[in-house]
Image (cartoon, rainbow, N blue to C red; front, side, top):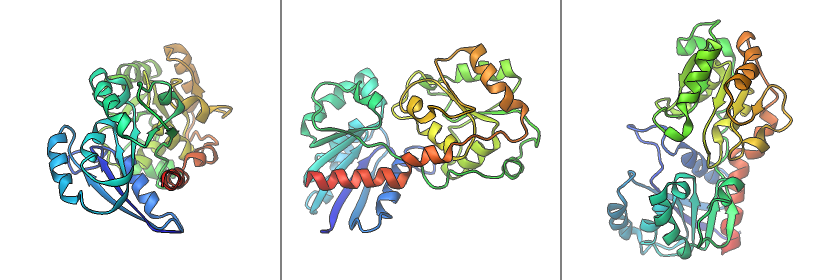
Length: 307
């Protein structure tokens, strides 16, 4: 198989100031580099959100290099990526670039220049603006660090009470669409302590998931729903709104709920998990369908098909 050289261009990439930003993009790059027999050479150009003009200027310095694929993550990143010559262009849309009115307009204008438009879920495909052609569902997958861990050890490591009643809201509370207000209401109704993501480093997130009695995802919408899959991979109960991949991922698993947010119904579903010392569900096998390695293989196959 001939070697393939790809450049990832993204404004979603972890930094010391924002360690959780785009960690799923980083995980996908690592999974692509680890694929057996794929013979991929992958470079990454990341830049701070909002720095699009500067990114385009900087990218001109690599414009003469012989990339086969230039793959942008996030719709607005597709514009500076145009500064680099390549055989084929790909953009992966993650949600805000499709649903935010201003970002949607800018993203839509970039789509005719792409050879492949990837989306994180079927749900997001249905929300695509006009101008998208050759669309594929290519989500970022669950990294191998998400796995069942001893709950008592996780709580001790994080300084949590051994017999505490904990719900994890695995998102930044400042992101309105994630609905921290619902999570806080639910915690108050169930008498649980609410743990929140946002400032949690990606490498620490498996410990926080395993330390919780359950993970709650009451979002208005999700581009994909990776947090639900990460909870499943850890074998931790999860209650989530039916958006993104949630309904498919949670179907027919005992101890979970995928339903529109309703305070009493969600509180009832969580009650047995909050009373149990170590509530667990049969989630790892389901989550494996969307493992980082499996999703990376789909991306590599899509790149090869374009060439």
